[in-house]
Length: 442
Image (cartoon, helix red, strand yellow):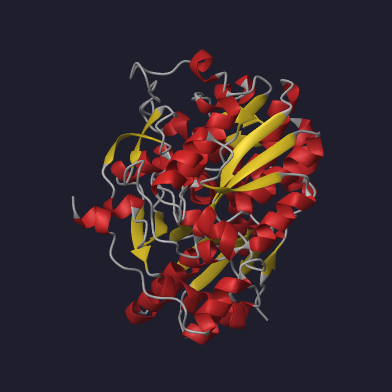
């Protein structure tokens, strides 16, 4: 019987984060101040983020030590397992070898806790009393709520309204960890009220929720803001995924031909891919594919330019692939992949030709998710199912070519709190994704 699980010991938890900015060959484009349009300094962003996080955001140091208190919390579930999907391979009758890194073993159910713990720790060091944030599908909100409870910090979450309605138990989970949760746009902020006055039925967007969280932050001296994706320090914290995976692939005796991850803001994709990009920069032949929904095709359709990270245009401008800060995507069930922009580091790699991107339909991702659950036993989150969908496509191409391709993907979270979406799929209440009308008008 072929080995299916590749398990590391706690001695193998990475003690340093890998910073791909050190190996790009050029400095990443800096964030620009929203008023002056000049590069931001750490002092410009200090009212929003703790200085420990800002230093990492702007660092080009290759390796950054993980603090012991963060390592102690990561050890609750890390290292996470790597599996070979042998049953899926059999179902596809493919010569490909399919491996997946499973981040759903975290207490919060996804990869998001890797950065939530780090960000909560740095906020605790600087005396932050409460953190305000946004969440799409609720995985980030759940993770930060848990991390804040670990370090005795209050947490306020603005959850995109359509997901707030679709995924009620995500709100319940956040409340279990002590967070206060509001549907966004909400009546709690000036900007939220403005949006609702124009459109009482607005489904919300991550851009709107970010604006509300930032408005809350700047109105209180003891509150900081936290983002669960996009920014450099978030991608940095997630590299524990790829660093562990490299060791596990060595245990399996193979090296990936292609690495796949879903992308909304880019954190889980960056987490597994960036450590392998270090090999690519050194001459290793490895492909990486980012998979996004057709309803929000940021990398495949969005231009690469400076844009605001939020709808109210309060954030610094980031150089990234973007559909526009005012973009409100359809209320698809992959709520965590509905962000208008993409991580600047991921965007830059796309511009440099280091990674590829594809967009897939939500009907296809649920079909892939069901096949995966019925063969491998894990019910994946709709977001993570985008990676599964492309992994299956790669395996089918390998079959057509008669090639033993090694496929690796990040299964970024489980779907146990997304069963309402599966219920809609089984009862024919989901539709294929319409073409992005905003993109078509460009």
